[in-house]
Length: 263
Length: 263
Image 1 (spheres, rainbow over the protein chains, first blue to last red):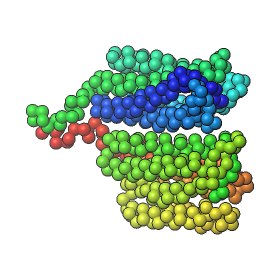
Image 2: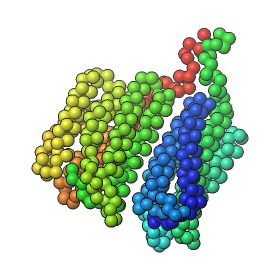
Image 3: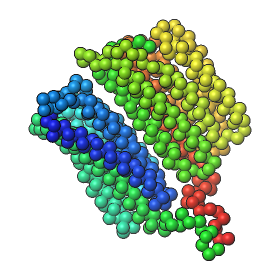
Image 4: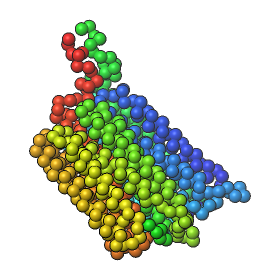
């Protein structure tokens, strides 16, 4: 993508958004690691996968932040390109690794037993197709190219959303009451975060000018990533805690050897 | 190896491949460390060795990434050599340490009791021979030299693959049903990843031009490393989880000392 001249306000908004994402991913990582003892062993892999997702995103936001800082220089009160390209691909490499893991996370915490492996495989393939077909449009400065690849990418996108929505919905019936509310919110959070990606992607063709498009695109993706990764992962933790409780597991019992009870 | 002029697309593909490998190795490390509680103590050393492999590779890919970024500069729309050499040796040092460990990993998780020590020793010696004899061909720009050393290196390569294939095959009969499927997939993954190395090695003599050869070689090695290390390690974890279960071990029971049951 070409790098338009930005006002300090525009440059800083994107820059500070990247920094916020680094902090949010790092904090998410610590939360998921430190919460392991609060959930039954059966749910720990879901927390592990949540931790992997934000760790991978933490790494990529560090790189994105550095790439952004190197791509612009303040000259005469405005930010202009240094000639160094901003590497858009970090986001796509990140999604290539994290989107399949996010799907695994959701499937694991709900313990969808029947056909979970097959569903993860189908969703992962769709995720890879979605990301790989989105990329050529992302890096093109041609509107038609962006629209064509964007449209192709939307097909696996809608497939994933549909399957997750229906499967999460189906699982609602079998969950304890407290968990049901959380799963319902998880579903809404999924829709809210995933809904932002296509809007951000379309910013450059939605009538924004060069600078406005870059701001809408970068802050949109960053916002969506913060919702879809650390916030989504936190909901996975809360679901896992409630489900552990519903299964009759308690963090106290695990910490205190039973031999201490009136033997 | 000489550094040919690359298009931005070619340079970026290699660059982003290295970055993906850093993220994949780091995520693999966290996964192997965090999964220890999910497997019986007998399988934890296999997970430890998997973690060592990706930790070593994580370090080397950081170095490779830096070396690559320093070797090229964008000039007039194309990437040209800065005069700084790209250090191919990082890969060979990495393999020298990680390939014997990968073999240990596979042997440990299958708990091949009879002659495991001798087999690891023989495979490790073959691995070192394979890597040491491959290197002179790798750094030579002479086709004949590359082919001669490549051929010599293929002898221990085929020996290792043969031994692993046969031994993994033999162990199939003694594994529980669920484990059998995983071991079969592990064997295929081994063949898929190891099969890519010689193809990448031969890229410069397979009629690719300078730039094409560098792209095929670097992305080929990176892809093979991502399959052979974090993905292979993940399959080791899944095998260890299934075998722990088959041995009657449960992560729940592990939290409660056995002495505690109604004494």
